Length: 231
Image (cartoon, rainbow, N blue to C red; front, side):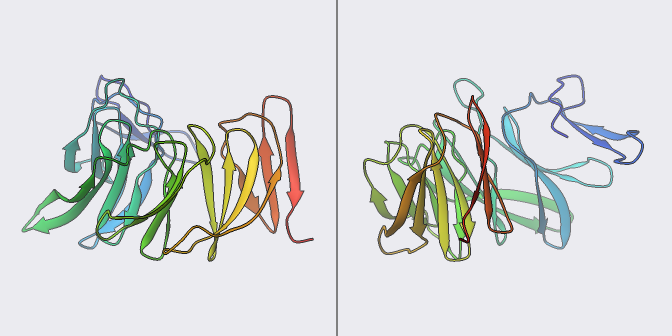
């Protein structure tokens, strides 16, 4: 759990059955980013984007394996890291879109910048990986596709949403819920933007939708709604 205490409990591991604290690690403040699990050089580890850094720790004891200092003006890391092979991709309104390669030399892990696209200052949205390409709300009220291997912008669709949207991947299609509550069905096509449909499903929101068994769950400040997408 990203507790965010600066007194040695940035990350805390609990026994899920009893609540017993198993270990505490780090002194970073927490961000708005979720933890991920990744395996690098055969070592399965917890990946965290805190308010101060991107880092990996051992699951068994919380030992820090590698760390990359990353700070924004307001310590506002809002997106979740994306794991792509041996790489971790992160984004913010300050650093843009950055890919760190995680490797091991002897007993030591190291993180090195594989590529960085500083123009893609994606603030709140977490990019979604389909194949070798990332899809996300862009930094200028647009939707973008980016080559995950190089950071190259493949295409940009202007006039899309406002500051935030949430993207779900369903095979080769994307469900994108904008902050105005408009749902877009888009083809995950790396060469061009292809919209397959759209519908107004809720009001203004910054809430990530959930999808299960053909049903989409969305909520705004008024209600929780479920839509059957397989009809």
